[in-house]
Image (cartoon, rainbow, N blue to C red; front, side, top):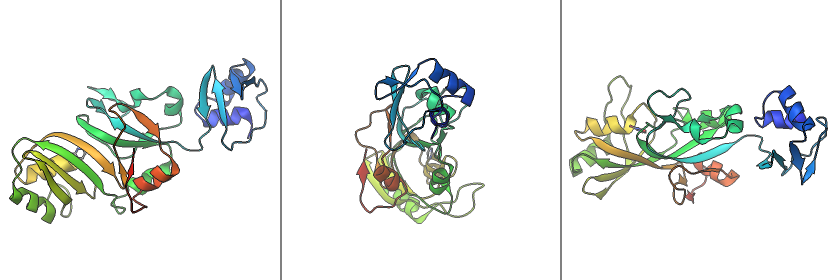
Length: 240
Ligand code: URA
């Protein structure tokens, strides 16, 4: 691939802008300035730098963020920060999108990508990728509420029954459960439907990909194995 085309594909701006960057001597490969925009590249495991910042060539990007509170999953956020504020413009130029949404006050695992097919695979209602949530509740959880969540509740303006699996009390007012759909405010509405209320909510796992070491506000690029885990493909949990 031509150097100018590669830079454009990675989010460095228009073809013309990329040509200018290269001609200005801003781009180095293996420490050598390449000033010819038509320089032919082998993309395999390619790393390069632009104005001293090193990048790896990625055909698509898959990112896991431990979302902090107070961040919205929309580009035009109004009352809060946007999760997109946490990423470099170069990544945003690639068309990074959230794979499903978390409320501004929900913390935890959020995946972002510029791969439309992957986004579809994870969010399509028929795929039922399980998601594990942990929550603090306003009132203590009782066994009747847990049983109701497992047998399923109706949600206003939504078709069907919404049931959780692996419903576990972690403390008197702390609950973990797995949900298999992704309708608006699903967990909060399910808890309201059984007569309780979510005080704080955290997503701990998507598919077999589980949040473990990644600190709040931090993000990583996902490896192939981690991407498969998010799609719920392997049997075993993969911690990040
Ligand atoms: N369910 C909710 O109610 N909120 C979220 O952020 C995610 C799931």
